[in-house]
Amino acid sequence: MTAVEKETKNQMDEQKLAMKVSSVSIAVNLLLSAFKLLAGLIAHSGAMISDGIHSASDVLSTFIVIIGVRISNRNSDTDHQYGHERMECVASIVLAVILALTGLGIGREGIINIMDRNYESLVVPGLFALVMAVISIVVKEWMFWYTRSAARKINSGALMADAWHHRSDALSSIGAFAGILGARMGYPILDSVASLVICGFIIKAAYEIFQDAIDKMVDKSCDDETIEKMKKTIASIPGVDHIDLIRTRLFGSRIYTDIEITCDGCMPLAEAHNIAECVHQSIEKEFPLVKHCMVHVNPSSEKCHNI
Image 1: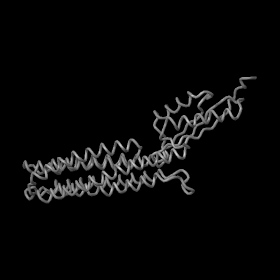
Image 2: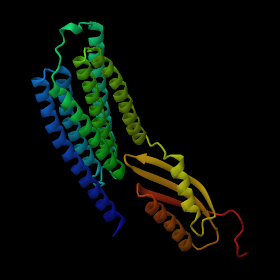
Image 3: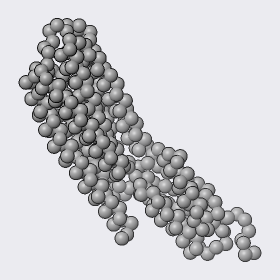
């Protein structure tokens, strides 16, 4: 199997997994939002109705993930010779903005309710809304772990952003649960306090997703641990006298690497080429996220060993 065929197969496998997770996410969110809205209307719970609308908004974010993953997995073409991986970063940024706006909306409502102080006018929610909040917490937390696992497997920033969207929904449901329980116990202020706490968690998650996407769009280098592992892999190859330079850059969910090594200056060109090719193949084999490794050979400045 050629390198191009291998890359195409990996992209197809990643896209299948992303589509599977996204399909499950859409189905779960549609069912959950419908039941939340029903529970909110029957049990007279404004918090549960808002939570239902939040779950419905997750469907939009999942469609953004699907579009981002599909575009990013397109093969290279004449206009995009390095591929389309950065389009997934764009999807992550869009999701981060949606997540931040969701958090700000929750926080705004909490502040308004606290400043209003008109708690006597609030209707005490029914038990159905409380039960639905618990179900929502369990389901959305499971969706978070399920989606995050897939995102880590294929190193998908957009899918990871969607996972955190599920977590934000779980936090929102916790706030709804606390508010409904507090209202039933005679402390409606708990709903608003919980909203502000949840807002903080969601804004933090949105910032981390946004920062990760930006790093992948501005050619940030890999972490030090990965670079050190690459150096050990290169140094273990016979014929490599010294590692002169190693540069890495994140390109969407992939890594590009530029390496300069020193070899015996008097060895035949074909032998030096074979060493460079060995470095190239070893890096791409040991580090699956490396899309391409460029190797340059510098001749040793010392005298030839056979003189």
